[in-house]
Amino acid sequence: MVNPLEYIGRNSLNLFQLVGELIQLFIHTLYWCKQALRNLDKIFYFMVRMGVNTLPIASFTSLFVGMVMVLQTGYTLEKFGMAESLGAIVPIAMARELGPVLTALLLAGRIGAAITAEIGTMTVSEEVDALKTLGINPIGYLAMPRFLACLFMLPVLVVYADVVGILGGAVVTTAYFQIPVTIYFDRMAESLEVIDIIKGLVKAAVFGVTIAIVGCRYGLKTSGGAAGVGEATTRSVVCSFVSIYILNYFITRLWM
Amino acid sequence: MLICLDIHIKLFHYTVMDVNEVEIDIQKLNKSFNSLHVLKDVDIEIRRAETTVIIGGSGTGKSVLLKHIMGLLQPDSGRIIIRGVDVTTINSHEAEKLRNRFAMVFQSSALLHSLTVAENVGLGLKEQHRLPKKQINEIAMEKLKLVKMEQKYNSMPEELSGGMKKRVAIARALAMDPEVVLYDEPTSGLDPIMAGNIDELILELKEKFKMTSVVVTHDMESAFYIGDHICMLYQGRIIEEGDPESFKQSENKIVKQFITRHGGAGI
Ligand SMILES: Nc1ncnc2c1ncn2[C@@H]1O[C@H](COP(=O)(O)OP(=O)(O)OP(=O)(O)O)[C@@H](O)[C@H]1O
Ligand SMILES: [Mg+2]
Image (cartoon, rainbow over all chains, first blue to last red; front, side, top):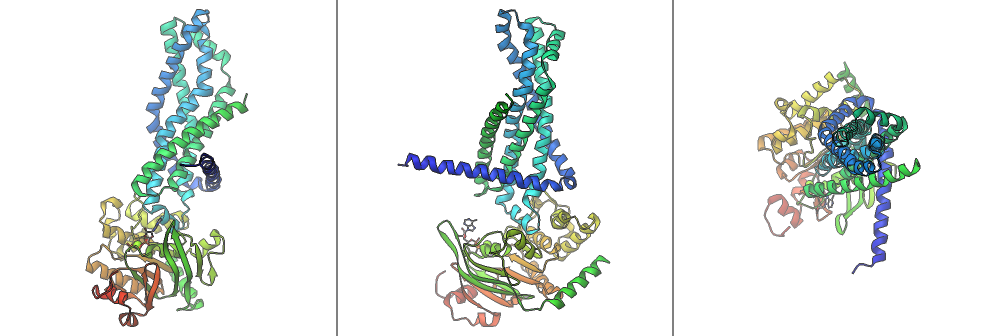
């Protein structure tokens, strides 16, 4: 029988340690960004790979989220004769909240997991140790390019997801509620402000950093062979998800 | 031109530093993994421009010992003195500087699976950003020739056999122009002829460049051939050490059995 107090105590200690390690890795990675210019080819390679891997699923997701949001809110708004304001609701929700969060969750599943699996495999097969013996810092060599790729690529993907979601909303608005597309976009132009989009992109960048750092942390700490890599990958994705939810709440709170 | 300069620096270096001085001095090294006490009060002196051979049964801590010398593992207690400086007491940056002319050949070879053979060999030089690409390639090819792997320069590690990977790993270690090389079973997985070639290579590097080598091996023939000093690790302790001749005369039952494969005490 585990003493519940002891259980809670140990787990919160582990949590503090994890947060500490993540912050430390973040700082070290920032330091190694001094070598970014020399590694543009690698950063670019990771960005392209991220884009290619996530574009299809990200478009699909935001298209359907945009469409279903119109269905859900549209009927209620129609009752009050306000269906025209769909153009004010969907784009704002997309830009501020759904675009960044959904894309980040998708990326955590696809890219974050891949980062942990790749670096974790290198760790258990002693490749990371070999890098050290060659005078190469694993954080500079492995974490930094992935970090910068995530930082820059996530906002790009979010812009794309926003656009697709808004278009999806527009299609359903005209198809089901017989509201001309021009009205939808007029409402959007009236209500959606540049600052909304920028806030969404800042969120996206923060999430990108989170995904990369969490992915690298679990990869570099992997032990226990192939099974260990699987375990680390799962943990990394869960940690990214939780971090994204928590950070999203606090960033939103900050801007209220 | 640059090669001349390099040799020049080397000569200068070794006229300044005496041969046969203690390069690495390990004192009372202890290491445990959880409840498993792997290294127990290990003492070893590794002399400059000599080949120190470490032998011992599987799982006795030979690889763990090499990783301590390389700084990949931190000891629980004890001292690791490199060129007179105790690296366990200084910060990691300083320790790294002391080890910057150390190279290691891993037991698992540890080639980067995403790079070709030549890229693996040139990786350390490339990331230093000192030499032009062309020259790095030349050095990589030169080192690959030493281990007779030049024809596979464009292969990926997964296309190589275990012994081939080992040879590439040796080339990669030598590409950094090291002064001290730690070999973790360099000839395991190699046929006798190739193993002999690697032995000759280690000897030649010692004679030509005054290179210091630490070789972990199970191959007793090779141990006696290349070793200036042989240490035997048994259950985490050094139970016998000396030059090859005295080692052959050892009265220790375990050592005897290890050398002859037969003879009494079970390991
Ligand atoms: N990172 C680690 N974590 C936990 N235990 C370890 C670790 N590395 C090594 N060990 C344990 O330390 C002991 C010594 O391992 P080591 O790899 O040094 O053996 P070895 O002498 O090199 O054997 P071999 O000749 O088979 O390579 C083993 O029992 C091993 O299980
Ligand atoms: Mg070993």
